[in-house]
Image (cartoon, rainbow, N blue to C red; front, side, top):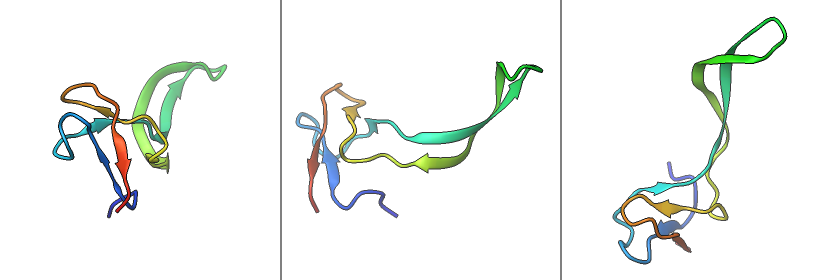
Length: 71
C-alpha cells in the first residue's frame, strides 16, 4: 500500500529510483540502571510516523532532491 497519494520524482533520474527520507520509529533499547543508552536491541518495534511528501527526499543514484508529482 502506498504511503503517499502521488509519487516522488528525481529531476535527473525520473521515478525509477529509490530515495532517502525520514520516518520515525520506536526502538527497544538496552539501558543502564540510570536509563542511559547502551545499545539498540530492536531497531524498529513500530513505525510512529511514515515518510511525508513535505520531507526532503534525496535520490540514492544522483543525490538530487526529489519533487512531488500528485497522482
